[in-house]
Amino acid sequence: MFRLFVYCTILCLGASVYASGVVSRSAPAVGEEFGLYAYGESVGGLSLFYADGKAMIGDPANSTASTTSSVYFERSSESSDSTFVANPNGTTNANASWSDEMLYIPSSSSSSHEMGFTSTNMTNETTTGFIFYGQWLMVKSESGDISSSFYVEESSQGDGIYSLLWDVSDDTSAIPVSLRSVKPSTA
Image 1 (cartoon, rainbow, N blue to C red):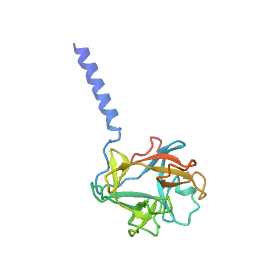
Image 2: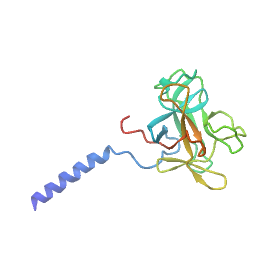
Image 3: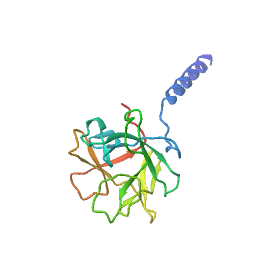
Image 4: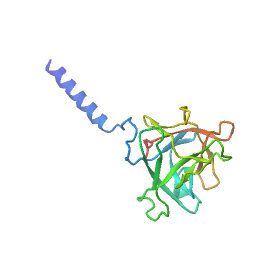
């Protein structure tokens, strides 16, 4: 009986040590800083970064854009009118010339599918509707539809750099991805 007690105690202690290193499955809280990472075929947890006002995926150090920086986001609220406000990550780019820009998806009236950052709400950009399902990023439309139509496409802006796109299911060169607030396990 004593052996069983010791065995169970050791097993429970081991499980609690293991569990302390496990990442929370909940969404980032309002006001909490977080990054976004793309997961998909050939894209295993690459980070979302700022490049001349566009949302790109990859390592900003490999980008040929004139202004690049890794970013952190903060949610404005828990509701479907939530915006994601981005700021340069000061640990990687302390001299960035931009701040407090909102992540946007192109609106249905836009001719472009590229996602980006903006300081003002334009008619061809949608800056609201970003929600989390656990740690998975989704977009809730005004009609209440929820989707995750994120894609990447190789960019000419550097080796291993991808443009982040919205709703391009008809483009065969675009790779569907999921955006998550979880860093890859190798980061």
